[in-house]
Structure formats: C-alpha cells, structure tokens
Image (cartoon, rainbow, N blue to C red; front, side):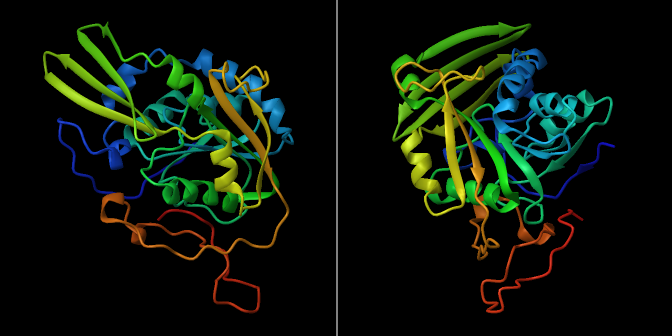
Amino acid sequence: MAILFFFRYYVFITNKGCACLAWYEHSFGEDYLIVYKHRDMQGAALEVSGMLSKLALQPSAEVLDLCCGMGRHALTIAEHGFAVTGLDLSDVLLQQALAFDVAQNVRWLNGDMRELPFADRSFDAVVNFFTSFGYFSDDAQNKQVLLEIERVLRDEGAFLIDFLNPHYVQRNLVPFSERTEGELAIREYRTIEDGFVKKNIVLADARGERRYEECVRLYEAADFRRLLSDTSLTIEAIYGDSTGVPYEPQASKRMILVGQKRASMPVCRPTTDRNESDNVPNDFISVDQGPNCNDKTGKGVADNNGCIH
C-alpha cells in the first residue's frame, strides 16, 4: 500500500527567482510539471529497463529512488517486482507521483537527500535518476548526499547515479531556447558559471511572468571518485547512456555511475550543524543516526524504525 509521509519545512518564495544556494526549494512546483511534461513514463521505462540489469538485484530487493520527482522511474522499477520507496523534497511532485500510483505499489516520502529518514542498511539499492545530484553550492553538502547513500545501503548493495556528462554539456550548451505549452510561453537561458551549469526559466501567461533557476555542479568522473575516496562506495562501471554503452567523455550525452558498497563496519556519522537556509528542521525527523561516535564499545546506538512522525 502506498503511504505518503510529510515532515514540515519552511521556505520563503517569491516569483522573482531565488539564490542558487536554494533554487531546488523553489523550482519543483506546479510550473515544473508543465515545463518538463515531455519527460514521460515511456522514456523512464526505457531508462530503467536498460540500467536494472547492471544493478544485479535479487527479486526481493528493496530499492530507494532518491529524488524521485513525479515518480516516473520509481513506478517503473516497482513494475519489475521490487519493493520501492520514492523520496523527494517537493510536495507537489510527490502528490503527482501518488496520483500516478493507482495500484499503490510504491511508498512515497517527503525528505531531504542530505538527511534521509531511514535506518542504516535499509536498502539493497539506491538509484538517482535524471541529474538529481550536484544541487548544492559546495562539495561538503554534495558529499553528504553520497554519505547518506552509503549509510542506508546494505553491504554489497548497489547504487546508480544518472548524471550529465560535463564535457558534453560544455561543448553543446544551447544558450537560449523558447517554446509554448498551450497558453504558456517558456524561455530558457543557459550558462556555465563557476563550475555550474545554470538554467534560468522565464514563464509568461495570463497570470503574469514567473522566473525559476536550476543550478547543477559540473562534476566529472574524477570528482565523483574523489568524493567517494574515503567511503565504502566503489564505482564499478560508467555508462554513456541508459542502453549501457561505455562512457566516452568527449561523446556521451550522459555519465551514469554504477557501483557497490563494500562490506564494512557500521558507519559513524557525527551530526553536523545545518544552515538556516536549509529549511529542514532536525526536530521534525525521527531517524537512526548510526553508531554513536563516542561509543567505545563499538555497539553504537539502538536502531529505530526510521519512520517520520
């Protein structure tokens, strides 16, 4: 049965855009569903079908679709018989996912990818499709996402990160495009600045003009290896698209990382302070924090059920 959990978070939004630091809290609303309506279930089915075999999952595997959006990939994975959880920060996209999930095959949760509401070793696989990584302004926050993937994965669990190919983006960037969806005019401006690819989206209709920003760090394969160097996550293969062709830095449109978590000791992650701009109060999250870093017995703290209350 599909269950939708929410914890509260607070954001201040205007229709004049927002800083790159927190663009992801502003851009994934009702307008996003229109701007990206061409991303359909059929496309997701092709992407999932091409990549699932690379993960070598057992029939009973539990899979987390991290940053699941409107649920296109999560629903397709569930159709293959796996137990799927979809997590996203956007209430709007989760409500759309829930509407698509007529058979109630997926568990849907609201959450921040830097602080997952799950106990350690909850999943056999974590997948992250459609360039849903590199959203944060500094390496530390982006690495925190990888550390959370490591924490919630079981030993020898698989992970997949479907990312853009930064080399292809830099050579083939389209600075400006425009189109219409019904009465809505869509103008998109793209730039590369300070190691990020940025898209400014201007929408205009009878309601007036709205502006959104998207901002993704241009990580290369070597950057991912650097970020993972002191974790138990190992990249085992890199593909150039969802059909499984080898990754070619100068030619591939995508950079899809597939890897595994090595068997390891319990992960010890001290709690870090969050900035006020994160807008996700810790007191609304009930989640296993992993072994106590000050516990010299090695037993750590007791697990809870990882649910949000």
